[in-house]
Image (cartoon, rainbow, N blue to C red; front, side, top):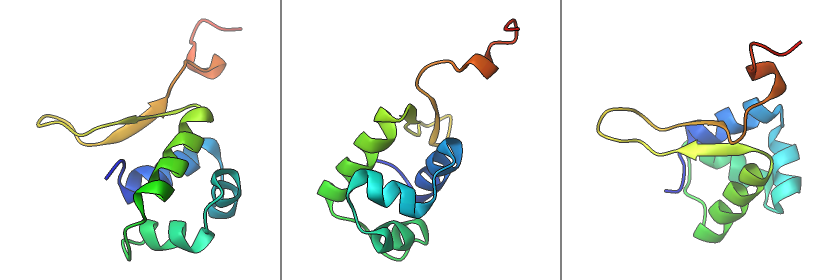
Length: 87
């Protein structure tokens, strides 16, 4: 998998996107997103690529799991609110 169902939910939360928002932006069926996030089915590779590309273009960076840490995600570039010295 390119990312886990949990990463997909977290990415949507980070962007404040609904399942419908993501489906529209990525050009995929909302039911596919619902089923994947609920661990009911595995999407086609082409759908996973569309989702990942859409989320990365929106500023999400996926972090792969290693032997030491689990999979995650973060903003691909710092946000103004992330800068503690910002006014």
